[in-house]
Length: 193
Length: 178
Length: 199
Image 1: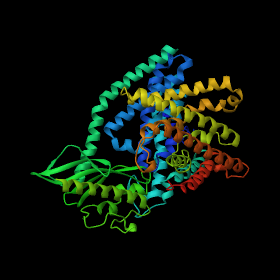
Image 2: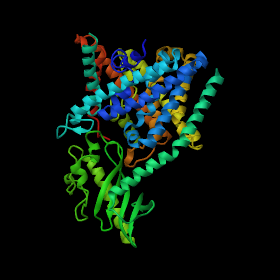
Image 3: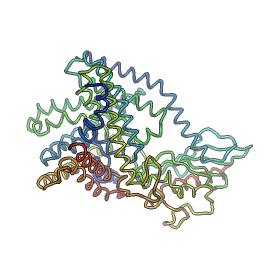
Image 4: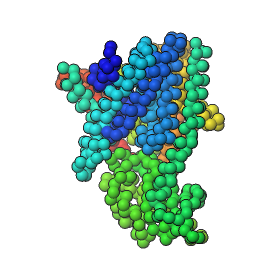
């Protein structure tokens, strides 16, 4: 697989949200606006790239029986590092995303990539794979966020283009399921032909 | 096998300890900065700001800051928490010595996005607190007061109003004691 | 009274699946049949309550006294992983019938974010039951965890029932499978929204 396709595959072919259907919890919970979706995606990207790199480095040394716990510890370490860094430098983002930052630990995308890719490939490829899947995840989250923000509050990235309220349900819980459901239909129609 | 897992855990714990130590000061500074900027917003310019003080009012303890000009305390910034729709709602309320609200700012909340969360952004709601006179009644209009509630978010508006009202009551008791 | 509020709030108002979006992967993954959904809910119920008990104690008596709160995430996930393993082994020995009912779901639960989510929530979030903002004590945490798990089971089993019926209907091709399931979940979430504000 060429280096470029490692990065681009996350957008359509192996899109973590619409094709692999992984990491649904943050996808639904943090996409009430485009900005939140983007930030959550980038946070996951950060953990994904670093944990992929470290896991590809240490996987030859780890006995087979304990590889899952070891991967989880590595991932949890990076998640906690991310928590500290965000608390220190972007406290408001940390407050918005709240619980879903520590929950990156149990995001199946991260552990899934460690198992499916990073433990059999080199550091560079694993990093690129992390970037690719992470960017794909970020893109999907941002798109869902944009759709929900337009319908729910009549704005894009906080820039309001209609006055008054939107369809509030789209900002709240039901809208998350509905927006993702209909976007998946659209994705199936366009990409799986 | 066990050795490997233990080693990984120890290394990771050590790394985290290191990062924790490195980011401890920036995190404190960030929290401090957030607090200071909210105080700055709710108090008039000039004067000397005190350190955090504590006071009791009706069995609840409040953290507050005073602004002194010369020998006179001109304004107070009170951290006031009430219960909103989704959880605790914490405000910083600036009150002048005569009981006039100077301005308010939300420190933390867990209100519904698009509804109660508008207490941080809704211009009409937030701007009414600037110079809210002590003669006016600190209740939402639905309850017979003078506070215009956020559309469709009465509970949040009530909680917000109560937080301001508690802060004003505290300042009044503090000012009369001096 | 306060306990009742915690229970109603955790099951209906802040339903963990439909309002908080925790544990969605198994919600979508194993909700094709009511029987598997029931098995999964049982296993989750058991693990959430047990994990909350253990993580609460570890946090209170090990992490906080030594100033090690920064190890919270890593300690909790390890405890949950170990606990799930242990439950699996014990269950196999003591009650093989229960093991064969829940067994296949247990390994999946480690990465179910509902478990870690509840464990982190009870030790970090201030709750407002009974009119004041406060942290939950051990008893309340357990009640909260158990009620949350009941809410999980409720939503999961209802959803599985809907999906069983749905599979008998003809659904447009692009909607087949997950999309229609998500839209169904959206409508359920809307119904649960009706509970908001009651406590």
